[in-house]
Image (cartoon, rainbow, N blue to C red; front, side):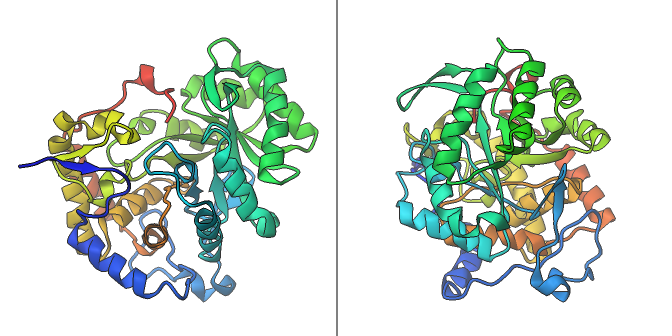
Length: 382
């Protein structure tokens, strides 16, 4: 069978459930409804929808002191050079504002996305609604113009980078400032102290860390309270379950999964013969390598089976499963397409009973996975 070359988000090979959902979505594009499902841990099927109270406001979750929508929007792919050709900027501005109209109040970017382009798009989009959202961005790299030249989290460098972030984001404060990747040359206490200074100056509200181990998290939190940890977490990549989620629960820290749909794999848009163009970032993802896809598609099949049971799509099952693991988990699926945004938000209408979660976990644990990052590689840049 001839290999399928995928250049962006899956379009041609779309599973029947998702095709049906997207067809209905396209017919409803003239009106952007507020999604009203209520996720939670082991909720019953009769849970009261969010529209019954609070004028349709989505149920909220907490990342430390921050209150956010249970699903956020990752804005990495809105910059060129990731999974798609450069999206049209005005379309991305509209998409972000549409997400807010659906109830999303948590938006995630980073200066390295582009570099700088994603922050510029997010800043433009959020200007009219800045006080209604929680804005997260990240530091941790050196630049020569628009080229990334290595990691740098020296305190003076962090403070200088934040000035540029504020300008690009068109704001006077960053709600959640993450250390993007650990700098091996700078102690975590020094990094946390620098962000603490920025908090004291009013330029940052809260501190976050990304792709660190529990010991590093504790060291950071001891200096400046950490509001959230961002790490890869999905049905395929479950390393945070080893110790990180328990550490977050102990310390009162939120957890933000990136890659919650495994770069679209869990949207059931690929098959064992899918291949990616060299310029597509997914071409270098071990989970999506030719030797891994056949095995990993069994987990996609599990999500597909549950989607049929729940009258949902596989990607909605993947997101709803994450939401059901802990009440402080806030996934940030990224997209550049309105139908996929609406589909992601539909995960809030999918609920699991305690028995269903146990059944799902048993089935998931029985399936092998190919492509997991070893713990020693857990700090690579997404």
